[in-house]
Image (cartoon, rainbow, N blue to C red; front, side, top):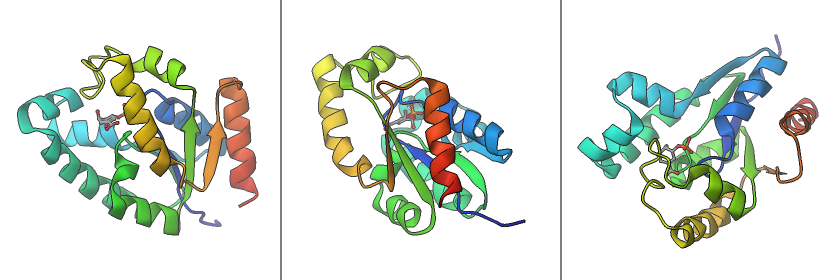
Length: 170
Ligand code: S3P
């Protein structure tokens, strides 16, 4: 079998990295992994409890280790956590060796999806303007991804189709 690079999904919380990633992996009939889920299983704790009990620095360290380890796989769809690509080591590895897809949406859509989300320690208590600031700051880094998918006017099926087309021509 012809081994291809991994497809890595990145972007803000609520951008559909896991749901779109899963659909893409099904279509391509390849494995799907979600870094946050791997961390939760390893720790036997939810992400929000890890933040609460161990702190964000602890989570970021673990995120770096787990992400770099899992990027060693081949032919896998990988959904990152929203902050993962901000880490320089992770970003360099992804940009050098993998196919990266940034799923981007208008601020208002993202805010509606993540505001008050108990699963998301960075968004649960944030005000709209704080989430907006985070999106603005992170987007400068997310836009380094090799492929940028403007999801605003697309259905899920169209998003998946676009990604498969890109994958098949790369
Ligand atoms: C984070 C996003 C979360 C999770 C953690 C931190 C972030 O993942 O990794 O809460 O910094 O944006 P999702 O993007 O899957 O919500």
